Each structure stands twice: as structure tokens, then as C-alpha cells.
Image (cartoon, rainbow, N blue to C red; front, side, top):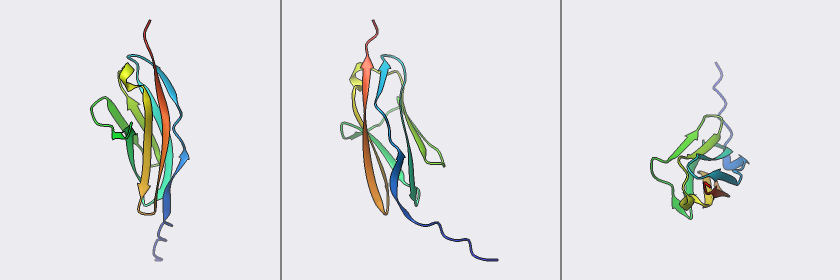
Length: 105
């Protein structure tokens, strides 16, 4: 039995970048991206250079490299630039997208 070929190492990179999004206050916001890299990259989402923490933020990162950030119950203070950094031992990339919040009439 031949040894399984080792996966070729690749730097972390974006296949699909997050897009700007506009959300009505109280609805859920969403940014999605797709990443590649071997070893599997880690992801970090930030707003204004602060890592996102808290139960309103849900990150779903599946084995095919699709990563979605959900922002629940969006507030006007959520307006701003969000960045996602993907990294592994071979490299790192950061992409940014803007969240705009529309006030309820």
C-alpha cells in the first residue's frame, strides 16, 4: 500500500471576499467569504481592529472553506468596517467589508 500523498502546502488566501452589506436595525447582518490554504487557515473577524466577541456574533466555518459571520439583532452602533484575517504558517491575508444599518422608520 502506497503512502497517501501529503497535501501540498499553500498559503492562506481568499477565494471569495466578503461584500459590503446593508441591514435594517433589529435584523441580522451577514458577511461571507471562502478561503483556501493548507494547513487549514484560522480566521479572525474584527470591527475597527477589535476582535469580535459576544453572543450576538456567530461564526460558521465549514470544511470546504466557506466562512460566514452572522451579526444578530443589528444596532446602529454596529455600523462600520469589518475585517476578516485568514492565516496559516505560510501566509496571512486580510479583507474588509462595510456594514451599513438602516434605521427603522
